[in-house]
Image (cartoon, rainbow, N blue to C red; front, side, top):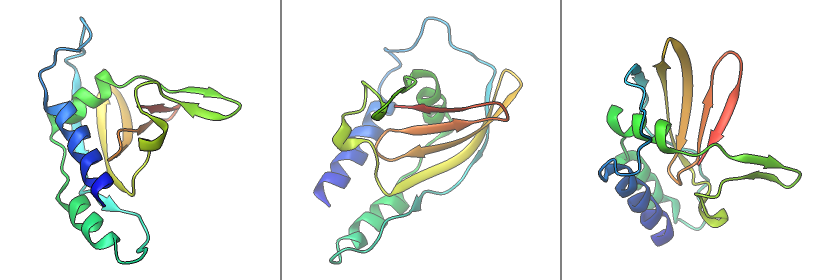
Length: 132
């Protein structure tokens, strides 16, 4: 449970910082059209999920935070052993808590699923991209 809470704090803190890591050209035509509530998808193992469910239910992302995640996350590389994101350590790449939603970037609609551990999946009609 401590690991779960620590990771959520780190992820949220990273996106609340100043935009000092932003690309020089950011797209101002990004519009967040939908943000769902966070959803816990884990199993109850030895009663530890109660605190995780509560932490997940409290986790929220603002439209500004989602824009930063979309703009600053790196696209994960795919190899024979799976996907690899240099920015996300392997031990912290997934947690049982996600926020889904939709955004429009320069006229293209994207559905997103952002995981509490920092991974995200972005889908449109033509492609699916995993970022970390």
